[in-house]
Length: 322
Image (cartoon, rainbow, N blue to C red; front, side, top):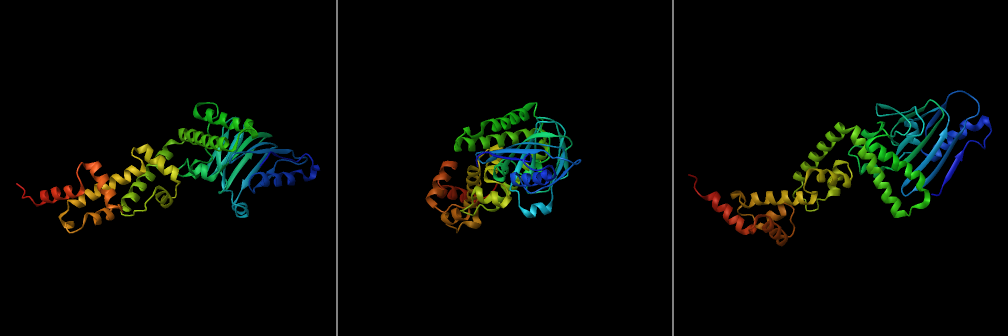
C-alpha cells in the first residue's frame, strides 16, 4: 500500500460528518462516530504502510468513536491499534479499563473487541495498526494489555514512543525486510513498556502459562511428535511466546523435553515391574522412536548405556536392605 490520504475538505459542509464516518471505516475498522455541535466537520487521515504495519496521521474535531458488537459483526478487526495522541485529553476505554492520555502517551486497543475513544477537543493523533500475530507473539493474553496508559515522556515508554514517531518519518524509505524487522522491534518495545506499568498481571499470567506448558509436556512425554507449536496451540498462545516463557525459566523447550523424557526413562529402567520390557519399548514409551538415538543421549546424560543402567538398577533393587 502506498500513501493514501482521506479528507472531508472536498465535501459540502452538510455532508462532511457522513464523509468522515466513511473515512474512518475505510482507514481503520467499522465504528460509530458522534460529534459535538453542528456545522462543518473537518477531518483528515494520511496513511502509509511500513512493512506489516499501517501508520496513520489523524487530524479531526471533537468526537466520540465507538466500536460495538454490531460493527464487529460487519468486519472483524484482526489488528491492534496503538494510539498516540499529539494533543492532550484523549480517553481510551476497553475491557472495563479507561485511561486518559496526555500528548505523547500511548495505549493499545484490540480491534476484535468493543472499545470507545473520546476526543473532547480538536485533536491530532498517530495510530499504528499492528497485525494480531505480532502482538500475540509478545503478550500471553493480548486483551489484558489494552486501554492502559503508557507515559511517552519517561523510561521505556519514551523509547517506544520515539520509535513510533520514527515510523511516521520513515515512510517508504525502508525495504521490506528492514520494515518487517523494525515492526517486530517496535512491537517488542511496546510490550516492554506495557510490562513496566502492568507488571503484576503480566507476571502472574506468565507464571500460570509456564506451569500449564510444563504440565502439558509432562502429560505428553510419550508423544514423539510433541513440538513447541503443538503445545502453544493447546495453550492458545504463540510459539514465539512459548519459547520466551521457557527462556525466562532456564532450559529451552527442547532441552526440557529431552531432560524429562530421560529422567522418566531412567526410572523405568530400574523398575522391577518393567523388567520384561525391552529397552526399545521403554524408549518409545517416553517419545524416543530411535533406540540408537535414545542410547546416545542417555549415555551423554548419565555416563552409562541404558543396558548398563538397567543391570545396575535392577541389581540394586533386588539387593536385601539392611
